[in-house]
Image (cartoon, rainbow, N blue to C red; front, side, top):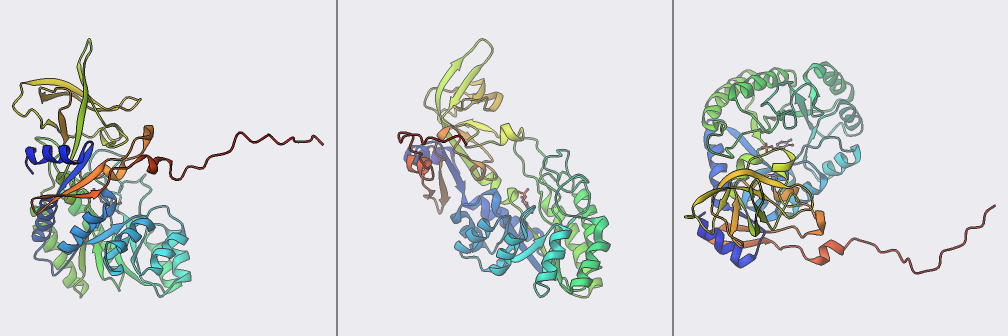
Length: 411
Ligand SMILES: *Cc1c(COP(=O)(O)O)cnc(C)c1O
């Protein structure tokens, strides 16, 4: 999308506003599927939690994607978007058996990541096949908050507990139809990924009724110049060959599944904010925008970098700015950023605002969550209205403090 198209959207729909470029999502989807074109059965299950707007789900459905869900509400959202239950996989962590049973009743694929739940579910529903989430204990990337395959992670059943899984399967006569891993959001090195995959193949050999192997996600996309990006094409070549070999030895064409979130939607997104004030202090120049970590928390939560561009003054002289929000807390989006000269009222565009941005937004400071717009077929489509005061007050219940206090008699 061009900056002037974004600017027009900010003018037409107001700020702050999230904008997603459908073409970028489409291109990423096609990049991934063509990287794995040599695999007979490939399934991409988009991770809903990255960006869960129903129109985004419908767009991905139109491309042939399934979805990966982590809550019963995401399952319901997927069904509302028109996905059939068999196009949905439920991969929760730490939820109750009740919630898993509820999802199972809806007919979606179940992924279990806890031995005790596996045993309970298998005992009650031996006829319902389930997938198991394995923790291969591989550290992907360096950030312990987003690496979920390592030893201290709460995710998955340890690779060392396979004998126990096998015992549960035998005792309950349940069927394991898939093996899954998701090692985190930060795969820097495809060799690490391939290494973890070998562990998965090793595990898979021990289960005779598999239909799919799910390699999760963690594909890295560039957030700034010079960032490393997962080489999907190379991964595709290497993993496809290995997967096809495995299927031969397994004696069946299994489905190779992925569940990318960030890879599909991150780069499609721009978050547009308006500069309320430029504030010169003794040490820096602040640009204060009409947003904060209530709308985009990644910089403050994870220390993530989002490029910030002044789309109102693209030719302006560059200066250093610290871009902050309007929340009554420290909410720095970017420190010492070189940005084209900023004036009050300018529109700043935050890049890579597709994944984990709107979906992590809140009403903190009683602010409205932003509108969302999808740029599709050279047209801006409003896909979520900006909230109103109604949304803030709606579920709040007032206590009547004017009625007389009841006298409590001491015994
Ligand atoms: C969050 C999540 C994903 C998506 O991860 P990305 O880094 O956004 O691709 C995939 N699978 C599971 C189980 C997840 O929880």
